[in-house]
Every structure is written in structure tokens, then in C-alpha cells.
Amino acid sequence: MSALHPKTTPAELGIDTLNDLKKMAISPFPTHYAVWFSHLEKANSQLSTEIERRVNTGAHISDKFLEEVYERYFPTPDAGPDVSEYINELLDQTNTVQQISNSLHSNTELLQEGLTDATVRAETECQTPAGAETFVASLISTAKNAIERNEALERDLIEASSTIVRLKSDVEAMAKDANTDFLTKISNRRHFYKELERLIKAAHYDNSELCVVICDVDHFKKFNDSYGHDVGDQVLVLVAAILRDNVKGQDVVARYGGEEFAIILPNTSQKDAVNLANTIREAISRRKLVDRATNEPLGSITMSFGVARLSPISSSESIIKDADAALYDAKRAGRNRVRY
Image (cartoon, rainbow, N blue to C red; front, side):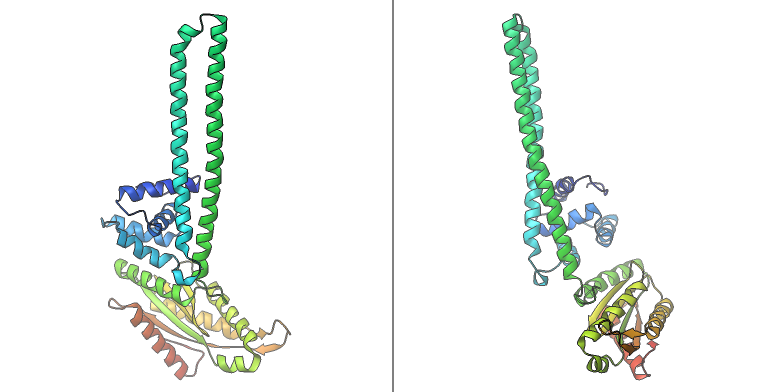
């Protein structure tokens, strides 16, 4: 398989992707292409880690495996525009680049053949001034034709490469939009579940720790009724920002629904997860709220947190259930606290 390192152009990556799929006897479907292209480009470290882990264990890279990876890391059709159309076009452009590359190689061979033929002809045609003039004119014509063909192919190559860059950017933007909550700009519930499944699987495999935190804004309905939904939305955006600012790059922060949020904390002990939840809780309770439209003071809000730790037999459903139960205990105990 191709080495994992940044290529100079997306076109080269596209060709390597097709070659690798062929070597692995993988069907060249758009979904498989999208996964392997992203892997070679190192566009998503989590995706590449999952693939490398499978390769290192000697497991076969199959059509089914790549389809499962695609489901976890790329948007589904109901999440917006049909991403498969973009990937199909990306695949077409990569094939175009491959054809142009082949044509450039053919042109080089034709030029070499012409020069070899010219060497043979030179012995007989250059014996007179007129013959030499004709011979030189023939050489110039051969070189000129080769240059013109190559220039045309280079223009096509630049155009195809530019299209690949644009399509790749479009696919990445669609994937991000499909996984992002429109209001708060953090992960949405759909992406949370996908990431939770993936991270639990990795934690079980590595025998590493993982915690889930479920939290929500205390008395948010009352706050909304008092100040209106626009102000309520401002509060949700603020909460999301505070959550995001307090986690690490490997963690996942998501809007779970309404005023409820969720955090996945891989490689984190229950003690550290509880400490983090308390840090966030205190940061939120200290924050003095102001209506951005009127500068009216709105007081402050509090949040309650439930923390659950992954066990050897935990599933995504069971750890969420445990975190929800802990959140309920925090509410029942008076709110503005952390339970686990």
C-alpha cells in the first residue's frame, strides 16, 4: 500500500488511492474511495488510527470494513446534499488525471521514438545541405508537436487537479455540517452517538478508561419563559463555548438535545471526569449573563452533571443510561452539582 505522507497534489493522492484499492482487491466504489483518500491524506487522524490498528493486527481490509468506516466518518444521505454525487465526480476527475498521466507518458515515448528514428535517418539525409535542412525542419516539427500536445495535457491536468481540490473541500464541508449543531456549532447528537460507538470500541480494544458526562441547564424552561427564546439561544451558545474551552482535543462535546449537553472523555478516569465536570459547573455558575441586544443583566445560571465510567461490559446504551441516572440524582439532590 502507498506510504502515509502528504502528497504534493490531490491528483497524486487520487491515483494512489485507486492503486491501493486495486492491490487490496477492493471494489472502487465512491464510499471506499472517500475513506482511503482521507486515510492517505491524513485528513482525519481518528479514521487513520482505526485503519492502521486493523492493518497492524493482520486483519483484512474488506469492502464491508470500509463501508462501516464510511458510515462513522462521512455524512449520511439524509443529512444534506447527496455526498455520493460529489465523490463520484471526484472519482471521475481522478480517473481523468490518470488518463492524462498515461497520455503524457505516451507522448514521451513517441518523442523518444522520433528521436531514435531521426538518428538513423541523419546518416543518409544530412549528406547534402538541402537534405540537412529538411532533416532539421522535420526535427523541429516533431518537437513542436510534442510540446503542443504536452502543453494541452498540462492545462487539462491543472483543471482536473483544481476540480479535485474544490470537490474535496465541498465533501469536507458537507461532512462537517452534517455532524455539527446549527446553533451552538459543536457536535450534534448524531455525531455524538457515532463517536461514542467508535471510542468505546477503541477503549475496549486498548483496555483504556473512558467516561461520559451528561449535563443540562437548571430551570432552563423558566429562564426561556422569562427572557424569550432568543436570549435562551444565547445561553446555549455560551454554555457550548465554555464546555468546548474546558476539554482536550481528543474529547467530544455535543449538544444532546434542547438544553442538554454531553461530553465523551476518552483516556479519562472517573475522578478526573468528576473534577472536570465541577470545573465547568463552577465556571458557568460564576458567569454573569447579559442580554447582548439590550445589555440587560440576566443574573446567572447553573448546571447539573451526571458522570458515568465505562466498564468492561458497557455499551453506548448502558453508559448513557448510567450518566442519565447520575444526572437525575444531581437534580433530585438540589441541582448545581455533580453526581456519578
